[in-house]
Length: 206
Ligand code: MN3
Image 1: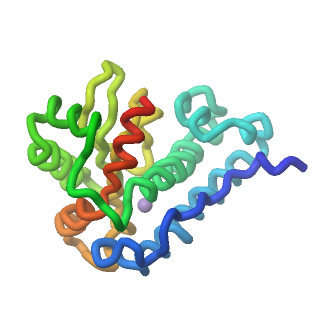
Image 2 (image 1 turned 30 degrees about the vertical axis):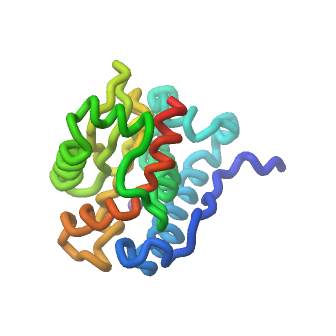
Image 3 (image 1 turned 135 degrees about the vertical axis):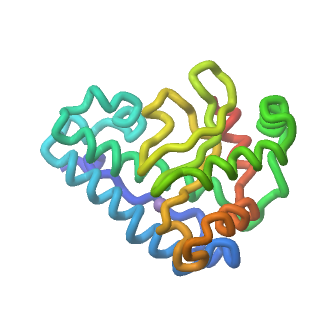
């Protein structure tokens, strides 16, 4: 049997405690080994009876959810989205964080939002006001402009025709052990570990 039929949990690009004190090691371990692994496992389970779909990339599955059989559409949306979003999220953080955006992505952020501070404020508002579980995003929209958005659950910008450049997981599982109900404190802490080099690489790829 060929092995490309199974989606796999990607390697975490750092140790569980690498982002301390902003993201605690226990949260990172559970988030990666339980939550992200769960999305991967459930995605594989959903695709089990669909060998034609197993060979597709995650991006191909998510960019056109309506092309999927109705029976597995929601499972792929939730669990494929969960796999995609978390794979991106791990790479969007680093212990060697720069103070802010660099180069072309910095220019685009300032051009669009007026200043880095205004961008952060609007992104924070999106992250704070997402009711329940979801994500805040900086995306390139269909018109080719930067835009701050948020999605519910594990909905993924690529399913909406947008390219994600920066994303923040605001599910309680991402912060509750350390920050409890204080989502705002988690958001503020998270800015200390944003991987602006990866943001720049993302921006240049679009
Ligand atoms: Mn999560």
